[in-house]
Length: 463
Image 1 (cartoon, rainbow, N blue to C red):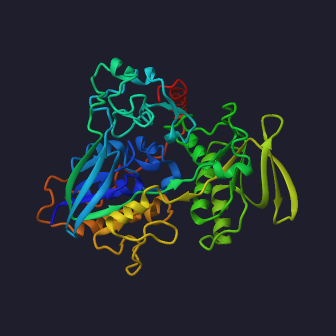
Image 2 (image 1 turned 180 degrees about the vertical axis):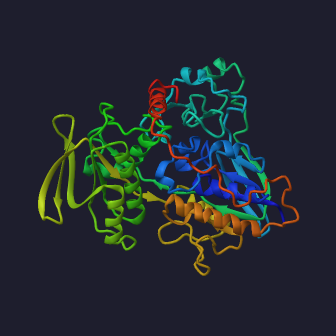
Image 3 (image 1 turned 180 degrees about the horizontal axis):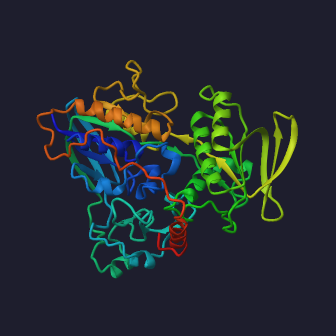
């Protein structure tokens, strides 16, 4: 038996599980396929106040807490290659891809300035641009820049038709001679699978007007605008002219419990920013997970207006507004209204590569394509393989609170698989402690701080 736990994925579930295990004295190996940790909450993890009400009072791990914990080892741009053995004594092989930038990187931005390759920044939902050598956000873990080698002009590595970034790097941090692939072997007692989910793009919303006007955005794009470490410093603004909207419509093409949770969260954030009218238009009947009473309750709590319609269409109008047309299914009449922004709430799906993860560890997928859980014990974290656990959205869409609850349960179960005689003795006596200090309410007079963040983002230093 070992004193280590392997965690696949570094979103809110994966990192909370990592903190719980590390605080209990276990060694933790986190494997993340992206260049930085954090998943969908990577931006809020840089700022204790940025998560706002989305966490429903729960504690979100910050990058500082992770970087300072000696019990946590993090592999980014990595995946699980294979796993052998059984509970208490697994041997995991981790495949790590080259970053081509070492920890000597000081984030001086000189390389970014000279890189000729410009791409959409997927971490900002395509709202901003990045270079082939880049950092997704102003603060990341790891801190070093990364080279998108598939889009770099130096492909294959060391072909060097460009080499501009190397020439300006005074820290000697860029090395195209790094091994493209590296394998690492770790012995672990349990595995927690927390690879999260992916958000569908807006391509499927073309018939609703997406792509025809910049103020018709997806919910993923709106969320990045609402996050303070984001392109606009945390304020919703119209992409067409950067003015603040007074009337916003969120459109739900399919109403599930998770979709309603996202829409309600964003509606609440918009209302807190003094958006005059926030309406939610539902274009389909709710599924069995959402009842009319719950919809009414959430609408009352958030202050959003719920409309039921069909045959929706949004298009440009005069006065920098959008004309929205739909058939009201309650009043049974055709409605035309005007909004400053229209938000198309995109669906979520299993992340890319989830089937390969399931095959590697030898467990099944459920009917929706997520990881299947063993329902016999009712905790939602066990699988058909002992000591192979799941947490968060790996088994289906969940709220932040639900993901954190599962992460804690998975961490507790994983620790039971470890030999208590070999758990590290240098861990703090904080088993079960929150990931960060309790969140304090933002004081009402911090507008200057928010304006500074906005200006910081606008002048480009945040990139």
